[in-house]
Amino acid sequence: MLEEDPKRTHLPADAARIAAIYVSTNQPVVQPIGRAAQTAQAAVNAQALSSVQSSSGVNLNEEAASLLQWQQAFQAAAQALTIGNSLFTTLINSVNGTFT
Image (cartoon, rainbow, N blue to C red; front, side):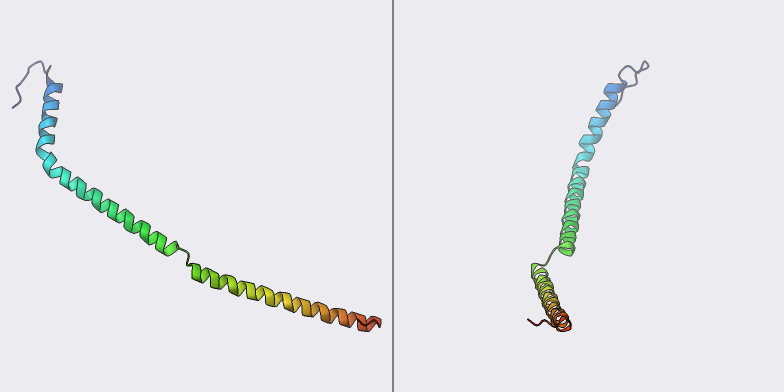
């Protein structure tokens, strides 16, 4: 295959020829492995992305129910403050002798 060159002036050409032979010989074996690896990596990436999205996703029904609970709690607190204000106003007016 390779001819000996005492001066080694053709070494780069020989190296290029060896590389070409190596690639042409191994390409049918290496390419399917590379494609399979790419396909597997894409599948793993898709599964990881799906897993992250499913675990960090927001359930709109749960959020709406939570919002309603907070709204009702706020309304109840506001009503309690209104009643308390009315009671204290009545108490202060009774102490001062003025009634409304």
